[in-house]
Image (cartoon, rainbow, N blue to C red; front, side, top):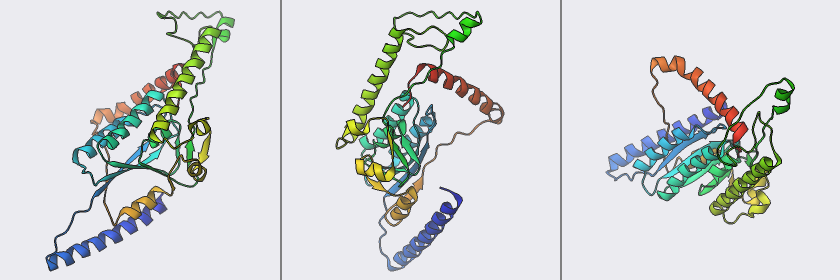
Length: 286
């Protein structure tokens, strides 16, 4: 949320806290026994292409499962346009742990939950999206440049040695074959079918063939198609639950050593750059 929204939310939260404290004092004076409210654990996932944020998500979900009761709930504020299949598949599996643990999960999408982001969202018991949030994009894409003719023109050879007929289908620097292209398209279609099956298992009422075209829709349109359950923002949800739940933000942070602070960022940037090139050349994206 932006600064203005945060100010409004904090004002509302302080007002509610003050009211709760006053009520507690009144009950204490009268000798009434206070019944503890169930907890609403609030998690955030702002996903990148490689979905490395799943590391923190895993720890946060483990922490919630360690202390939550059956009456508690989780609200995940999700923002992601998608990315690598294996990363977002793991992120969706982490969210499934909550449902298997008997904890109700609501996903709030204020901006975007597309492709791999929607793979995560569809696991929820309820999806709430802002009116103009981008939803859907149930498809698979791969874009691979090929420099073979440029290298050949400049008398530069690239040797690629593999074991296994389809260890490499399309490459960045080698000469691609029609057989390799056909196998690559086959792999994309298989991944798409797995994606469709997963979404349909989570939301069986969907007309999966009509929404799994790779298109995206705005929140209000997505609701009409059954991709989301309600229209609203995460701020609306939080304010509505203040009366009924103890709202607890859950964040996983790892303390870095002084040397890591100086060297870690540069090393991570290089690693992610290399990973991005590898993913673009070898792996399809959700």
